[in-house]
Image (tube, rainbow, N blue to C red):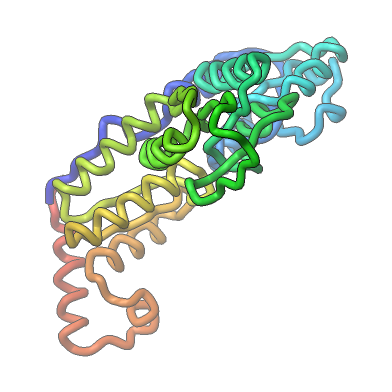
Length: 289
């Protein structure tokens, strides 16, 4: 069995920077929310003495340094941190910083700002803080804008969104607005992972995606891989990063055999299905890596 690992697997630049900084930093620290969406990693930080707070009012000077995670925070909250004279480390991803600056710059120049993204995502909450003329949409079917074709309209995106969605929205907006300003703010890491997922899906018999289902990047890559699986007759397995090793093996067996998980768990298989399961397990165990 040949295993191909995408060269883009793992943490993106912004997360690597945040993780490295926190682990190398000395002294007491607290993070404003989870530094990254990985419970095992957060637990390793807790053992290092780095705890999570949800509200800035829970942070005192004696608690050490406040760590601002990669998603960034609203400008009003940053002002409050500075007013309290807290010692902080700003680990907002540079791509997110760029998006924040661009959104506010376009707003100042009189543009109505359309943002492709998730309204409740921390990154978007940080971006729209202080904006008045804007809308956040998740697809091209959500447009109900009371605007004229001659109005100044701009299109930008949450850094972890789909390029396909972005270009679909752009096409529809260009038909309606004469002077549409478009700036693709989707980060390189997201684009690279999306492209790699398509390439690997075409080359592989089984597509394995490891991640956290609630994360935008993981959910999108998983959705795209499943679409590819239908188009190219492939098998797809999703592994949560928080699964145990036994759960991972079970998930892999189910995906490899294409047998219903419930039937395997209950042992209610036909003779030919038992033979198929036995063959697949031996193949997995004996396969060279």
